[in-house]
Image 1 (spheres, rainbow, N blue to C red):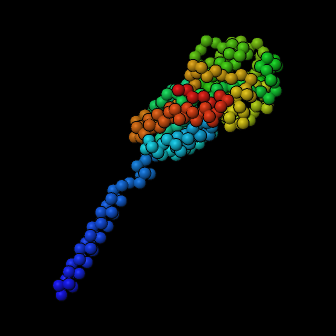
Image 2: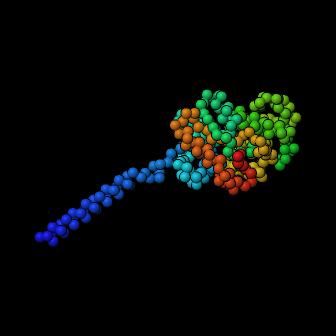
Length: 278
């Protein structure tokens, strides 16, 4: 009987120990969140090139260690990303340079904040009809974008190349041309449509990202290319003032200014199509 009682007591102790171990294990498991649970998700609007690939590089290589998870939503126009940011459909966007953002804020009353410049996409003058700007015929047709800040930028490039002269105003439009020795017919168009219209005009001034999307290499195909030195048109990350994810968005902005991102831009665009602005 003593042996039987001893065996029963030993078994009871073993069962108690097993129960205790299992309870401890379950408690530990539920108290430790998975890595995805601890990440802050940011929905970021971006142009397909080069903004989305830059963000994807951050998402794949840098974001998780910074406590972030990126969801990248691509846009092919310059209006909707700010509309969606204002409406709360995006946490941030990355597609525009500072003069354009400031113009949008002034015109539409957006309450947005922004970081410093991340990269520059040089504007270029392109043609399928001539190989030199000096060969443009009198009365030739030139396309410029119809949004004010980028139109001013394109007109200043035409002026720098000696094709026109502008009045002394901060953001000139096609109505501020004071000298046009070749009587160029300067037409406005939506920026994304200009590469498609290139074969039908003499010259077209194309934004760097749309040139890349159209398969153009700015450093090789442009007849004239905007200088990157002291260029005010660096692209920035923007977000809504008072965002409850402001701290996470600022972490993303820091990552976009990292040495790793600068090297990615240089490696991906070795011909200067896109250059870091920091």
